[in-house]
Image (cartoon, rainbow, N blue to C red; front, side):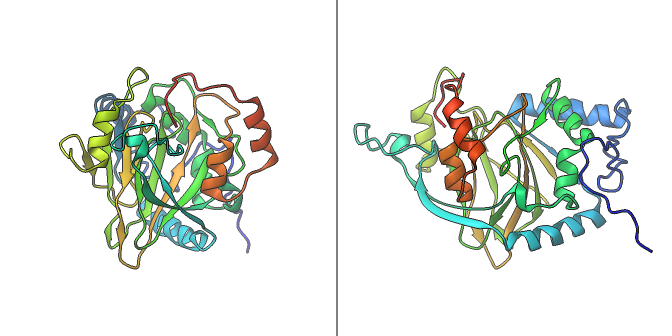
Length: 296
């Protein structure tokens, strides 16, 4: 007898079949256990720009999600290029030690949202009102929204052996991730909390970190599969170190925005995903300058 298949549904609040509901009772917004989780996450985000909800996924569902991600990873688009932390072109007029002139090898491996079907656990989590409510409350936002972007918003990041994500910033204020498969070695998440502000790019401090002259301000986070990470990557320089061993590092990225209708930048979309849509072209024509004035 066929049973009803669970599909991604932006009206479905109940995630008890996916999430450890004893630790994270998302279906009971005023439960003391959930309120405690939210309070701790807010404190961690205020202090470090980073919070981790350990063991967020049920173990049986995590195993299923890992299998789904392994299958999806076969569709990954890879692009290797030399980039600086800002994804900008070289400027020979700047001093050689300026971080805008420090280029690193980045291999981007991504599976985009349009390839992730509605029955996948990643999609079910991403669109759930319970998930969005949790993220918003932890960040102190009234509401967060899914991306309107047909490729971004929900992506699977794939880092096989020998690849890494060098030092960079995120274009959005915050990001939510979950590693679904750890590599045999390497692949550690490192970050420098609030190393820049809208008033100060702090090029000297950023350059010292990239050149490995300053490790004092670098934090290393021990992430395990099934942990949910909330990170403010717009102001905190961060990277994933080189992956070692035959097992790739697989990470689900849940990108939400503070306002509806967000579409990624044209050139960065082309670099990361190997293609753009008509929506990206139109959005770029209509796009205003960033309010914070920081380099991307």
